Figure 1: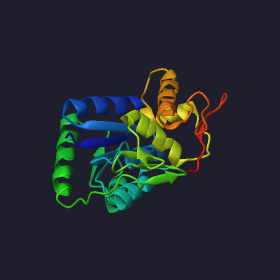
Figure 2: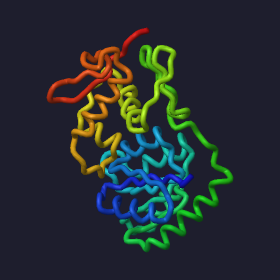
Figure 3: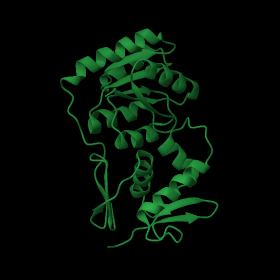
Amino acid sequence: MPKHILIIDDDALLRRSLAFNLEKSGYRTSNAATAEDGITIALRDQPNLVLLDIGLPEMDGMDAIRYFKDKLGVPVIFVTARRRELDEVVGLELGADDYVTKPFDLDVLLARIKAVMRRTESTQIPKIPGKPITVGDLSLDPAAHTTILKGKQIDLSPREFDLLHTFLAQPNTVISVDDLLRHVWGPDFFGQPQVVYVHIRWLREKIEENPNQPKRIITIRNVGYKYESQES
């Protein structure tokens, strides 16, 4: 099974280029434009390594690395345009496994990735990518990738599972279509928002008693959707 690398950088062109080249080299990739979105992805699908930009909007790389190292225990390589030696020292003291300065040679980055993975694979302790969630009569376990509705397991596609996970993580909270696209399909998805509507319909067919009159996944017109708890 290919190793999973999570790319977190607010430069969309760099994310796409890195993802393309890493996948050509045999890796599986996910990517995010913010640390917050990267953490959401990592909880759902734990990476083997994170390529983390320091200069991110809102939560920056210096803060995010504590989460990836302390909570998930995954190796992190800082990728940054900052050239000051102090940044490197601080970054490595915070627990980064390596440090690459932009612009960088792809072959050098690939070599660094392989070296970090070799160093950490023997000591890395696998951690559960998110705790089980129960909302009313519906339970979802990200580690086992199972969904239980009223005591019975239901089969969901990977995208349906990620969509439901996003809803259950924020029950009774309205989530916009743009946020669903960003969290479930990724920030570099360039398709039409109709893909959300289609997957919502498929998901309703599996978890609603009457998909045409949904009581769980509720449409909030001109705003988005929210999941409402149903007791057994």
